[in-house]
Structure formats: structure tokens, C-alpha cells
Image (spheres, rainbow, N blue to C red):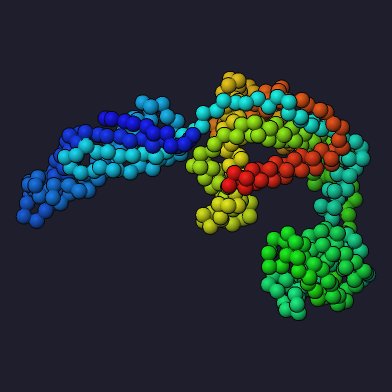
Length: 451
């Protein structure tokens, strides 16, 4: 077997393999002999069909089988001998495939990029410092009350925060437009779920009243045919309802897992959950800054096959989130919606893998169990959660990956300049969200620039 490897780009290789004709012809002859033993043909007993007839009838198909098997086997041998690390599956094509001639085929493949990590020294990282205040706890209780509130119909003018039940029809240039109408729609005033200016003009409306609302669609509105256009909505107000908040009593507290309804225990649990959530927000904000710095310092090429795999995974996740059902064909979702984020994820994954490898980072069963115990604290029966995770190899692998990522980020953080910044609970959550959005925008801008 003769093998030559051509480097066509940083991560693309083309392997040309030649296999002596004698090997192929001998393998074809041997397979035809085995085939002849079971051939049934009119005029001949089983196993007595002449080889010339067998070859004429089955020779082409058998040769294709043999060539396919040989190309797959020799491809694996070639990448092993040449020390190549494929990312995804190759494209294999036979160039010369004729009896009596050496078989020649070409395998085009992507390989994992060779990474020499550039440091992130000098990177400025802002690390929030959060202390949960009594006021934060009280605000969280109010949020829980609102989430569990009931709506009571009233015969009075709608106020900010009230819920109105309406019919509406939108018009542009006196013509109704698609998607601009609904009947019996419930809208909470002040929720900002409608076009800017719509909800404000319903404040003061009474049950049974007709309203005419004038708004202008934002310039960046998702429906391009409506963006920037002025519209009139004719609205019929059917009902006005006010929010009735539940009392923080024993029954309310029991809804959140405090079985005896004790308020002090309830406050302790809320503070504990908020502390955990704040810590996660801090870790996420720090991690996002570190990973963004890592990407900027290491603009590596990313194999398209890995990007496609990540894109497919994101499609399946999106289908689950939107409840599209297990039978939904995710190929209907356009790649363009996910590719940029998928590429960023793959890049980060490759770089973190190199950080883990370079620094010989690992996590044993004790570390995995400790992490699972930490995660299980938020459940009512943590012991069962720990037992379930530790008995499931797939879940253990997921936890181990998370630990390795955390340790890699900690290692990278040693290279950065960290500034502690005091933040409130709400500011920390908002900062982590804002950082995630900024990173996503940066990834999109980088993709557009490279394009």
C-alpha cells in the first residue's frame, strides 16, 4: 500500500492511497467462490454453477463490496500510520477502480487543529462581589407572590399592572395586516410584551370600551414588512382584572417545600437559594470574560464537521424547548440560526481541551461526588439525587466535564487581572446576562468580519 498526504489547509488533508491490483483481484475471486456455493440458477445444481457465469452475474457487485471494504480499512490504517487526528468523517472517492489495475482512492478529511495556546495575560476581568440583603429576600418573596397571584375581574379603569382581556385588529394604510389581530387576548399592562406605546394607551380603559391606538413598529422589528411603519389598532376591552397577591401564610410557604410552613425556615431557604444563584451568576460572568479572552487570543480554525455536529445538537435542543415533538424533523430549522454560536462553542471546546491537556487537569470520583452533592442541595431528597448520578456513567461524565471546565477557567484566571466589584443581587444577575449577550454579539460580528 502506497500512501501520500497533501495538506490543503490548516485543518484539511487529502490522502491518496494505492492498493496493488493483485490484492483486490484475489479478494474478489475469494468472495465469488464463497458466493458460488450458495448460488441457485436454473439448469444447475446449487454450488455447481460455473465460475464464469457467477463472475458475469455477480462480479460487478462483489468487486464494489470488496473495494468499499478495502478503502475503509486502508483509510483507517493510513491515518493511523500518518498520525492524523480526524475531525468527523472523510469523503472517500475511488479514482482508479478497474480489474487488473492498482486501486487508487482519495480521502478528503478535516483534522483537529494543532493548538499552541497563547496566554491571556493582561486581560481585565471584573468579578462581582454579592451579599444578599434583607431587602433582596423581601423582593424575592414579592416576586414569588406575583408568580402565584390570581386575577380578579373588576369594574374599573385599567391601571398599570392590571390585566385586560381584549380583541384587536391592526391596520396599516387602512388595510388589515397579517398577524395583527386576536380575540380574547389577555395582556398585562406594563409587561412590555407588545409594541412600544400600545400598553400605555390602554391605561384608563374600562370594560366594554372601544379604543383606537396609534403606534409605530420599531425599525428593527422582526417582521421586516412591518418595521418602521405606523399602525392603528382598533381595540375592544372586554375585561379588566387586578392581581390578588396571596398572603405569606403557612399554606403559601408549604408550596415551596417547607412542610411545617415556618416562616423563618422559609426565609433561610430563600436566602440559601439566592446565594447559590448569585454565586452561579458570578461564576458565569467571570467564566464568560475569561473564555472570550481565550478566544480572542487564540483565533484557531474550526473544523466544519464539528460545527455541523454542534449545530445539529442545538437544533434538537431548540425543538425540545419549543415542544415541537420527538418526530419533528430538525433539518427544517435553518443552519444559519445556530452556526455562529455553534462555531464559538466548538472553538471554546477545543481551546479548553488544550488547557486541560496542557495542565494535566483531572477529576476523580471523589471530586465528582462532591460536585454532585453540591448540585443536589437544591432538591428535597439530595441523597437520592447523589445515588442516581453516581450510578449513571453518562451523568458522571457530564459532571466530570463541568469540573474540568471549572478548573481550566480557574487556571486561566491566574493569568488575568481580576478586579472585585461590589454588586447587588439583581445587578449581578443582570451583569451575567448582559455579558452573555455581548459575547454572542461579538461572535456574530467576528463571523461577519471573517466572511
